[in-house]
Image (cartoon, rainbow, N blue to C red; front, side):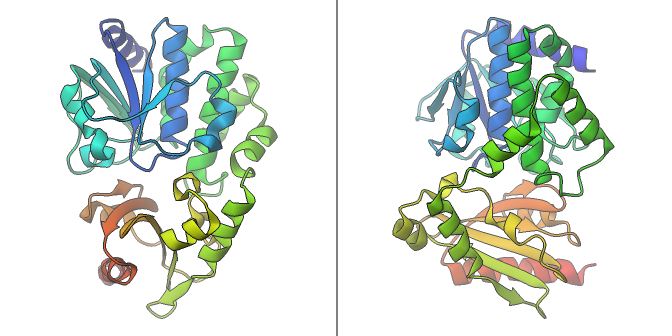
Length: 328
């Protein structure tokens, strides 16, 4: 299958005059970093591309961005070939969904369960058995990657390893299995230094970010007989600390070790009365809850966006969680 997919993608790419790569809204260390890896693969095959963002802060990935070509989305942008990573639903692209309409050809690579509004693509690879979109990319294009010089192989391996760090929460999530460790062993053979990437990606927070996290943790509240944990970060906090909330990793990772919980919901205000919500649960299928509101993700970790004041948004999510618990 891998050889067939890579052959088909390169046929699309060589036939296109312009190529864009993009990922879901509120990009993360899988979708965005997989884009860096794919851009390098294309570059080594003699193909130029541009990563289209929402203008978010990418400084967290600076150790992987020496050669990255990226540009914030602008209305009217058009590329003949659009490559969509870590996302299979049109709604999950936000305003960049317009790129789908403008493109002549579309390629989708994702490891999430297909959701509503599935993107119509000329070539689509969706397989939820993979730990990350980066892992999919590596296995599907491994033959081409192995033909590159060592420095290019190492860069791609570094990027893929970071996608795994991101989506396994540093190998602590239930999606960490033998397949993941086997891939990581292959990546280290290409020169990956796990201790360096762990520090560069997971231990590079600024003092402002740690203050942001600390204040967010101080907002913890418990609901439904103390089985549901909520915490939040509002815009007032970000402004007080002069901190860009789009650059923060999910604060929910800091409370996933709290005992005797059925679910966690972290509410992050990214614009006035617009809340990015991260759901985590070992008991519920939070992907189904997120999908109700146009979000998505995985069974145990998903995200969505809601509009309204904090009290109303939390009430909606609490009702959804309560309903899901009653259906167990």
